[in-house]
Length: 534
Image 1 (cartoon, rainbow, N blue to C red):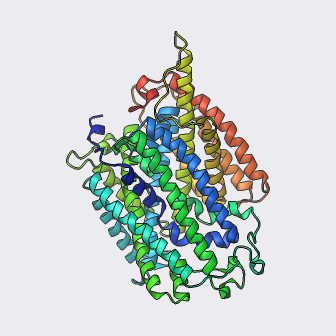
Image 2 (cartoon, rainbow, N blue to C red):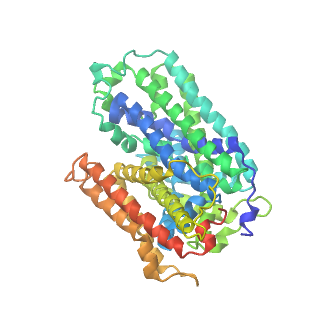
Image 3 (cartoon, rainbow, N blue to C red):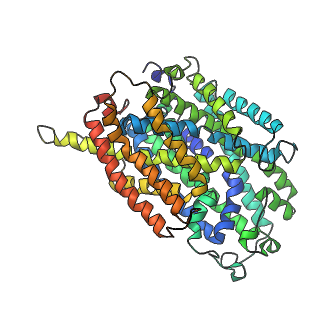
């Protein structure tokens, strides 16, 4: 707690909103419009809308947790409070692995920088000179986060402003260059949904839409450093989602309406660019825009990587509080309020992830599933806390329930299970190619839980296993269904029965998980049941 009080409460509404927006609008806007169009055609517009709505549902869960239990790195702490050490260890392990997501943004910068610096990117991965340059950029981003939260917020506000102006300028310039009327319903290219409406689901993962709207939880990780968090955090999260989805929709429309007819000879699936908006600008004789876009290909991913480094430091700090990492990494610099030791550890993790993966797509395919799993565990946490509060109210001698907790979101009784199912579906829709790597990595947290040194006040291991068994089973079922399903699996379980199976299993697991969490909280110390700041 002495370290917790050193966190500076310097962030207001606009600072938090720009953090969330900047984290969402990263490298995804440079690629996702093309990949989504390849997958679903003009119907990709529906995918963006669905992703925004579903992300808002998941965000409301995170908002309630952030508003009622504001804490630095809360997304790594709430599952431990609500479900015990097994779930806390496995989700914490996922959080530690997700630090590698910042490597995806750095890899995107390298891919576009190769336009000016040949030899740093080749055949979809970094060369040794490219790896050295990427490592140097990782050091720079760590240094920028080294000094203070206030400096971080001010620099991020500037980067966020550029990240809004350049995509909007791209939209305006492309539309002014001339559009092809009727593209949304043009039967010559298959109409609005040339590959069927089921392709909209595939576009969520395969088109890069899930990854692109990911990151809306960023303000929650700074709730411990926010002024009036119960008011500013919910507004900042939802505003960030709304602004980002609006920008993505405009970019998607601009791409759909301005791709030359010659590039649609083989339909939307035949549209292929290495740098979509940059090459499209060159085809439309907008050299000035292409130059600007290649420069912004460093600014936008760089901004997201900058935010990512700061968020990851809060996560690593929280993991040390959980006991997954040595308490050495909890140290907060008294002069800056920054978790500097956590920053150094994460720098090493980022560089390690650049070594085997290198390419943007290969990193993104694994990292997205890590974040979605954290969202699912948070949905269980919010319902477990509420169930525990109801049990305490029922046990009062006077039979009177305690007053309404400030920051609680209306409708959470249905929002939480729906968001758990949505997060599970998003994980499943990412496809077997990603899940066969991601889910076994997460399941590696189970032996880690068994091997970690247990604190003196730990409960019997059998009790902890019982309280957290739902997560192990859920991951095992998702892996099995993915292998048999229609999203890159064998197809033995065809669509839509595979997605329906995931939904039914998810809701059943959710009920089990909430009951296990309530049982865990029933016997937990008061400071755990209530949260450190609740």
